[in-house]
Length: 247
Image 1 (cartoon, helix red, strand yellow):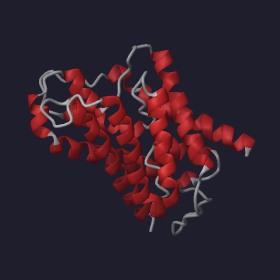
Image 2 (spheres, rainbow, N blue to C red):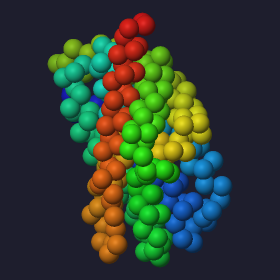
Image 3 (tube, rainbow, N blue to C red):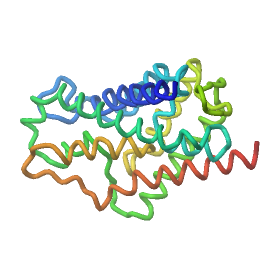
């Protein structure tokens, strides 16, 4: 059934965001046991392992894209059915919002006593170290290019959805760890400028949740929000096109 990969993408993305946002909350919010504990190393490692877990959960059902940029890149490269692109986008965004809600609930007492709104927003979504939209966009593009090109290079088994003609596309279970490692390396090498969103759903879903919170001084920073959405999407398009040319 076509809803099966939808649910797999939703659940896998929920786990990804729950654990990824969770580590940022753990090292940045007030009075957590992880507050101030070498945050960048913990964040990059935990995000990588969060990707590993999300991919492992969904891989044999949906191919575990968990990321609109990956879905788009695979479609551009002819590795995924265009018919399913909107369905996957929707599942990934909803999953990201669910995971963000769960992470917020897990740390709700710490959110209540954390007053620095930039820090609080940073647990939900990304922001630039130096605000330069042109360079920020390029940083997100190149980071996502690396992610999607690597994903295409280790594309796994055929996954058939009833009633839909799908070409080989997914990330098999054994490929979950390499993808997690790719995310860790991207974070450590290319993440210091924008926080390596490299996933439109990862940033937009939690940013929407943050904008709905009952916080007096909240600032979702919508002026910047298009960067971690369209930068990764463009990176996915370039990666898919480049892979098609050389393969």
